[in-house]
Every structure is written in C-alpha cells, then in structure tokens.
Image 1: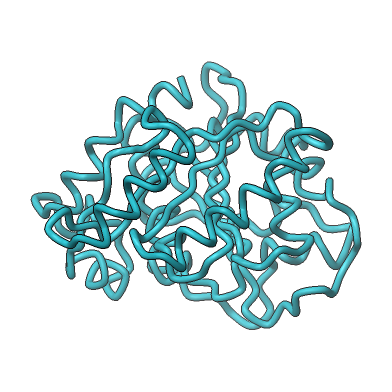
Image 2: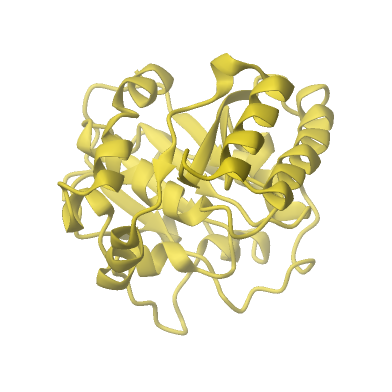
Length: 261
C-alpha cells in the first residue's frame, strides 16, 4: 500500500455526524473513505465512535494492546500516527476506535484532534481525513467538528433521525460562530431511503425546507448487501460493485471530487 508523499494536496478533513445513533454514520464513513481512495486520494479514516465498527467494515482485527484513535485523548505523549493501520484497500488507512474508552474520560481539550492532524506524519502522507463521530455530545464530537473543514450529515428519513439533525445543528451553530469558523456543511445525505415510503418522502421534504434543497445529497437506498459487506470486512464497492448501494455511492464521485480536489 503506497502512502508515501506524492504531489502535495491541502489536507481536507470531513466529519460524518448526527446526534441520533443508527443513522448510517459508520456505513457512510467507511464507504465514503473507500470512494475517495478509489478516486486517487490518500485517505485516513478516524473512528471516534466507541462501537469501533469501522474496523469491522474494513476487516481489521485489533489486539487488546493496540494503540487507537482514542489513545491521544488519554496520553498527550502519543501521536495519532502511532494508531494508524493500513487496510487491504489501496490508499486507505484507519485509526481505529477503542471500544473500552469511556466517554468523559481523558484530557478536556477540544483541539487535541486538530493539533494531531497538523503533525507532519499526517499532513504529508494523506490528502483526506474522514472522521466517524459518536452520536453523543461530548469532547470527541467537539474535537471532530473543530478539526473538520466539511461536515456530512447522514440521516434516516424518520422523525427521530430528523430530531438528531436538529440537535446537531444547535451544536454546529456554536462551533461555526466560535471555535471553527471554517467549518461548512457539505450536505445532508439520506440513508436507507425509499421514495415509496410516505414518511421517507415527508422527512426528506422537511430536511429540504429546513436546510435548503441544494444541501440535500443523492440518497443511499436500502440494500441488504451493505450489511453483508460489513460482515465480509469490505466496502460495498469491493464486495458487491454492481449492487444498487455501490451505484449510489459511485454517484457521489463528483461531489467528493469537489470537496477534496
């Protein structure tokens, strides 16, 4: 796997977030990272969600002694680079999560991740960082939002997921007006969507009315092969390249290229 420095690009940081769990954040994070890598970007996926499902989706098994993305929040002497593991997929690396990390523990500093991403081992070896965030409003989510340039908000077209989007918006207002004025919402992406279901159409319309039609991204349709791909430890483009989910993720190529030129 080649992650050696090439023609430098400005490091772009994309956070994937919703205050509601079960909205497809990790599915989106793993597959967006894979699509960016397929576009030729050198990608680092950082898993801040202690469910640690990014490792599952990329087929990595961790030992109990593994350094993780959460390690830098407990030990300021550790670098993020020490947590990075190469995956079986070209140009795609992972800083895995610690499933035993307790939310609320560690150093109370909202800039830990931003400072870690500024280290030469990260900024010179990767073009894009994708961050899978926890749904909780805590130091980990704040670190991700303060480090990011772009935010993608996945949501299931369901009333509770819409409420999670609204709760996240209240957090965003504080971040964008204060500690990270460069953060921009790239878009809202409906997951597991079916336009045949009335409530899905209703919630999509509400998101569009609330945040603007131009911010609504093409949806990812329900596809059991996405679940199977996680079980196989492969992004959908490698597990089932002709599936409808793979087609939906491929439709995002133009959008991703514009975010990370």
